[in-house]
Image 1 (cartoon, helix red, strand yellow):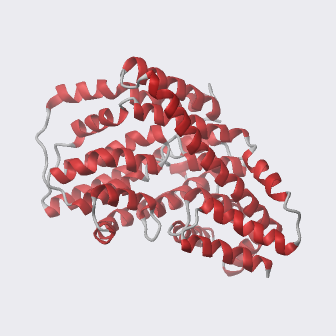
Image 2 (image 1 turned 45 degrees about the vertical axis):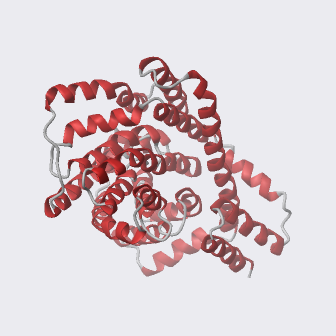
Length: 424
């Protein structure tokens, strides 16, 4: 009965639009009251969930991304991407995807990508003659590359939950993230050719060189992160701190677009964002503790394995579950509640933990662009001032593309495990 109340309150909270962190807390509170468990469990488990060293990455990378964005990074990345691919048919759509791939290596979050790249690209695309729905759809779809290419907030959360090396997961996301971005560029190009979208004239190698030099310091931040992790010279937490200092120096003294007076506000906003993520982690840890105490992970594994123990069928079932959950639940909450149970199931059929982490995160990223609660979809539709219906229809080809890449990554482990193996 108590378990049914727990699940019921949680689902009801999601349906009526209560924030996910609050919903997790309310559902856990109801369960504890019904079971007669002392409420001191809530702060204890919240603290235990947040008292994980690797979570220090979160405020570091959030601050680094905000400092770089405030320092003029977005227009420079867009200019460089436009010089590379803007001359092709549907060039601004391809620029949008390329810009998201480059920006994703700095922000680590899909929402930041959608808001920053979208705020610049969507109005420009509409003025150039692209349909608002397509402009919103390509931006929303490409923003999901951000948390696959390092740094990645969801992968930091996964590392805190499971003990899997965050550095190895960051590196594991590089090839899948690049594949995902290239596949969306191909999709955007095919749509552009079929619908006769405009293209710009080739701007020449001089503009390509100038735009590269303009974006160099921004792009070097991604190299700094990946290089530090691959070489073993810095842990993910140390890398986050180094990235923040680097972002401050570049924004203030190289690009000179980040006033010193703006830094305190950026620090405060970054602290608020990081605190919101950590509060969600804390409440979700209470909820997850209840599920573990009720032996839900074991029940899930037993139920699936009673149907089949075929590795490939189990991977398919996990993908279906995560795609469905991603349609209704915030990414971090879904990871905290479901990752460990599904990891247990995956390992029971021989799936490598790092491989599983990559395709699990990729699953939930796709959910950010699917109704009814795809936050990136709504952000981009808002910027484009387009009704949500046409945006959903325009998203369908990109969703199909991303699901194909998801299956490719799910069934070809080397795409995720080869680069991390070089770190051993």
